[in-house]
Structure formats: structure tokens, C-alpha cells
Length: 319
Image (cartoon, rainbow, N blue to C red):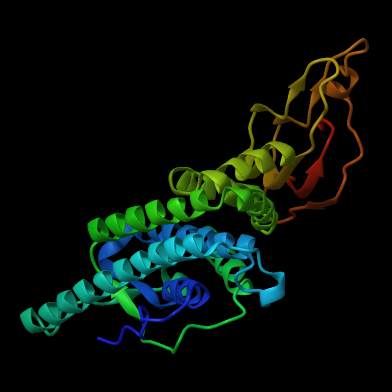
């Protein structure tokens, strides 16, 4: 097994950090993960992004004169925690190699060692999130690992869960070791969240991150509130009656919402946007056909006239 010299006597804090972050790039998933593959992929991305955020907040990738001053005792403790993360990866790789060797001996024709990839096997929304999070982590790296190493695969979800749990715990200890850097990490979280343009992707990421990355989860929740609701890929037809939006009390700031890729047909009665109450309730919009903000197209192929619209609304609309 080539561990690429990840734990080397004399390797400093910055070198250990760089080696640690680089490890994530070589981890793959076997097809035995099945329907758990996508969520596990994002769990790994979250762990990588969190460690890279910690290092960026301390300026570990910057030139020496731009880095935060770290006392020698804290450097030693941080390095020890990072080395434990590296050892976790080494142990997982060693177990996976033994599993792969045994699988080939047991059945040379077995598909147990086939690999899933994000490009070929992940749902588009998971793949989109994976690529965004990977780009964020890679963009923070100005150094590479000691030397390139071969990719290796995980074969058992229970071992993956334990690995992520241990890495998450050690990363939490790193974060807690430098409380003064946590404001910088929160700022970096804002950058991460703003890079995810699809609100539905944020909600998906929050479901996965809430347990392992509380700082990221908190920022996602704030961003979702600020963005408003996201209604996408839906239909209204027949005599359906549908309203999507907020009902705001007097003095409450009205948020815009995103309505995309929907179809309204037949006699459907659809209202999109907010109802704002106050001294003069905004009731006239309930029955008013307002100008559409965006591109509206007739679907000539359908047996009845349908309208397909994608855009942002801050008012109510009726068809």
C-alpha cells in the first residue's frame, strides 16, 4: 500500500494539513453503497469542506506573514489532531485493500469492486452539489500533497459511517481549539452557501450537513429564509386551485420567491406571490391579471393552451 508518506516525522502543521485535505481527492465508493452512494458522497464533501474552511480561517495556505499567529503548544495539538485524521484514512484504505484482495480471490468475476462515480452514477442535483463543494475546497488549496497517490475505494457503509464520525469529531476539536477563528469560518460559510445557486440544493445539503457541520447548517437555514421559497417542477390543471407564497402581517417585510419550470392548464386557478396585510390589505391582486415578469411561452403541442414560465415573482398572478 502506498500511503504517500502522509504521516512523516518532522512534517509541520501546514504540511500535515495539506496532506489531510489532499486525502479526500483519492477516496471512491464501490457499487455496494447502492442508493446510499449520493448521500455518502456529500457527507465526504462536507467533511473536506469543513477542514479546508478551518485551515483557510487560520491562513494556513497563505504566505507566512499573512497567517494568524499560532502558539507552539496549539500548533502541536492541531498537528496531532490532523495526524489522527490521516491515520483514520490510512486504516480505512488498508481495510479496503484487504477486502478487494479477498473479493478477487473468492470470485474473480465478482462485481463487488466496481466503482461508482459522481459523473456517471449520481443524480444531477447531487452531482451539482458535489462539483460545487469540491471546487470550493480545491480553490482554497495553494499547495499539493507530498506526492500523488492512487485512488482507493470504500466498500462497506458501516465502516464509512464510522470513518466520517471520527473525522467529524476530530475536526470539531480543531475548530474548538481556535475560537478566535470561528468568526472567519462563519464568513467563509457565507461564501460557500452563496456559491450554491439552487435553493432546493441548499435544502438537500442542510438535510445532510445538519448533523456533521452545525456552522454550515446554520448559515444554510439563514440563506433559505432570505431567499424565500422555491417552487419548481409542478403542474396545475383541471379545476385545481393553488396558491404559493407568504401571508404577511402588517409591517412584515415581503420576500420574493422563485417559481420555475411549472405548467398551468385548463381551468386551473393559480396564485403566485404574497398577500400583504395592513391598513389597506393587498386584496385587489387576488383577481387581477398582472404583467408577468419574465418570458412566457405558449406550448402549441399540447391539446389545450398551456403556459410554461420560469422566473422570480414578488406579486400574485392568476391564469
